[in-house]
Length: 360
Ligand code: 57M
Image: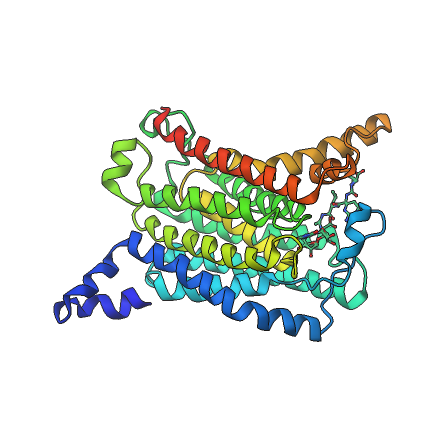
């Protein structure tokens, strides 16, 4: 908004020219989102406590979690508010990619909110039925899939890591739509599964968003895209501002979610942030790099799949409990050790992802 309102006035006041730069607006999107979260955080936590929006702890979970009973959940509200305000302030509001990403994130946030609300109201850990949740994610993915399918910028498909884009044109045809649904519901659910220890989900969300901040910037800049031989998509650089706002809002949320957490993000946060990463990875034409950058989410989701398959086929469990962070807890690991080690892995994966840009 500031770009749309103030940049045209650069003729009269030349310092406003700086608003042209995505790098400048991204940095300020981080700062703004961070500060808003810090300011509204305590108020939202107080309000959640007053409304008795407290986490229901499952009795079959690790015993160390029993003392977390009563921690307010739905902290995703503060992430979404600061993310949205920051994007609206620093993003170019004539850019269609900003709108579609906001729409997808907002819709998944509402789905998560309804789920959290139902859990709190009924005092159970069940919430919205799994099939209904999947159907809603399917519909959201379908709408975004249609948008991408009909956008001429995506006619030649997505970039494949380790290949020069010019070497291949992977046009999925109408299969693009199921692919988009798969990526968005996959990332949304994988972040949700990961969100089971203090600070465990938010830091990998930030490292992944940071990677895609750089990737969107590169994909949206014709000179750098050509130099690195990645596809160029006009206007996609604005998503760097969106990713930056995720990083800022994430840092602000971590302030309150660091061990011992005084608020959880709830499905409001996990479903929307996961979906946002999926949408951004697709729009920046690098969905496959999400497997590396978001490797923590992949490991968590795969641990559940392996556990369920093994239990169904052999009656035996591979992990003491899935997702895998519960396995380490059951083995006696300290929560802070597990979480910080997962953070370290996510930072390494972010670096690895960026190095693939040169491995072509
Ligand atoms: C999200 N939710 C946390 C909080 C957070 C298929 C199956 C693997 C599904 C999985 C599941 O239900 N996942 C959904 C996990 C919960 O956190 C809330 O949920 C929000 C995210 N959606 O924001 O509101 C608990 O996690 C802890 N927590 C923290 N700090 C945080 O910052 O400590 C969360 C955020 C909170 C709190 O204790 O209450 C959760 O784990 O429930 N199911 C499971 O994860 C269950 N696994 C399982 O059943 N494994 C089986 C099979 C099916 C694979 C097996 O291994 O045999 C476990 N989860 C729990 N108890 N809690 C096991 C039992």
